[in-house]
Length: 197
Image (cartoon, rainbow, N blue to C red):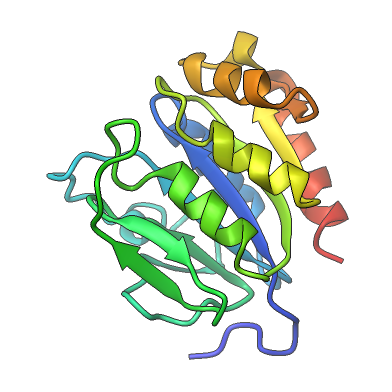
């Protein structure tokens, strides 16, 4: 099924762990069709997690949502969620790949794995955001994206339920822009508008 073939493919990436679920939900409520990019969400989840995010969030947005299968094509005007116990990789052929290699920062899916693969995929990454979490996962990947020209954002550690993740990102690279919790939704709207043209 095609959801945006008229637009060249680009990505907006979101990563988080502890304390990020409510933020992900806020973002989903902002996303609406048509959007000129594919949004990819990576949230740390345990192997036993049975939550199906497209089902949980079905009333939050009118954008097509899925937990993609191995080798599924990546399409604009879509939202994708990483599944538990696999790293979600973005291929240069504009397809998703699942990888069951070792956990990264005790996590699979790894935010770093998705962010780094996106950075080297050749697909434009319009924006990438790292939110709340209790490990340093995502910090290196966000730095790679920033160094390759993507707009990168970090939740202000002072506003994060779990500060370790945003703090680690800022320690790795100080040039990320900060997201304030009090202006979170409005800032996300501005980011998506700016990077959707």
